[in-house]
Length: 282
Length: 324
Image (cartoon, rainbow over all chains, first blue to last red; front, side, top):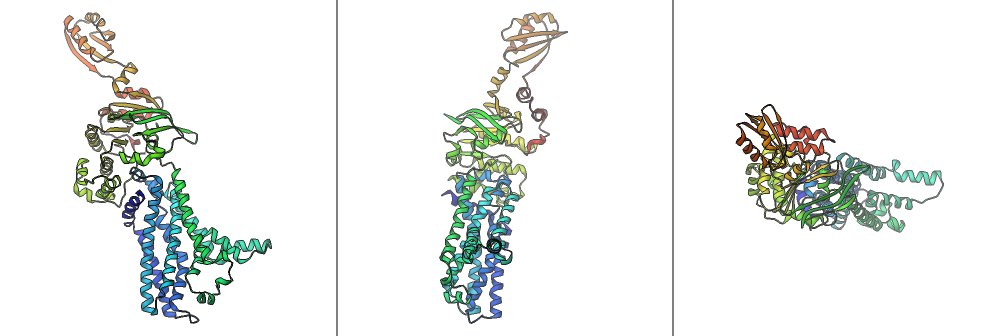
């Protein structure tokens, strides 16, 4: 399929872009630092160090990974439209759908490769510092984190496919990052906090915490990811963190997080394809 | 079968009509010059043929395919030199050519292509960021030739080039045009298409205002040809009036001006005058093509006249508005 042709050519191009490598390496560095911190400070309430390190990694990843994914992909199509090089790309035997898919596959490969490097190094450090690996949890966290990254790549591709200039693509990517990530992660200043205040404090609607969590999952891949990682950790570990899945409503458990994360990958990509199919490339 | 065919092709952007009711037919094997001042709708038309822009109404067919539904089949068989498009800075010339060949499933004869467009093997190894505008344009032309396409679409091929570059680009196009493929190329400079084109179409304000061979266009405008002969005895001019193909004769002092229906009558006029009296000097000029071009387009755009003039005088100065 021609999308793979677009992918190969795009990887050839983008692997020479320093910025992508820079943010990728930054994540690896942060991973190493967090593992080191656990190594120095030791365990907590008898929980295995490797699980604690991965748990911390999830939260730092929740903040970092969208930035990596957006930076790696937001210019992929809009940048080419601004420079006009997309006219060369569209003079090869491909259709527009294959162009969008090819760009997604390419940026996906680059981002996945940089995450893979970070997780392989983290696995090595676990063996050296913690004397154990917990392979199941390790692989599950790595897989969910990669899916999380790909959801943001899909969003960046959709934004890039819908805009005709670099500045607009950047505006869209920053806006999306701000709303779905920063305004989700920081509890007091979050969308969820606002909903809670309006619905419960002002309107006295008595909406429970689980529905609020669910709304946040729907509007944010970050919240979907944070919910999905419950699947990766053993129940006794989660109980100590006061996150017993048994006590949660079914629609905020890990399975729903995973499903919504997958939706966050597929739907933006479809929107990107749909939007680009109707674009005038002048 | 027409290689390019448009029926009532129209494109509007908001309340601006870029192309209006365009009916175009480019036949197999011909070299078609698509002329008009900047902003006449040439690039919009080409972008619709390439499915970069979707028509507001009307339709187009390229190599028998509808661009809006079968762009992929069209792209497989055409070579495109787009206008105002940058190449990939980080990739080398060779990588560009390899990519294009691979995407078309063609034999990547990179060395031959580089040579054909006048780039050295060392140029091919360098990334595009080190290329001049002229080198980029040559490489882009080489990419368009890759895979031996049935149809070449060249959008302002000399845009952004210096005079030498323009001259060289014209030479390359002329060589490629000699083969049997169809070439469709746009320009706002008449001199550029004049030497190579079988037929031209002139666009102005979104509409095709004239189409035909250059000879046909000259005839249509009835500009005819003319000849000026200086003779010893002006009375002999009376004999010139009766000559086949002569439309009018005016005499002033010793100078006889004859307006002719076709250029072939020039010889007959001179011969007739020579029989009657002594011919002292002959001044002959063809209908200026710039004149022709301007007749169709000057009412809307002073730019085009400037472009055509500067081109006619010499190629030393390149029109300022060339880069869009």
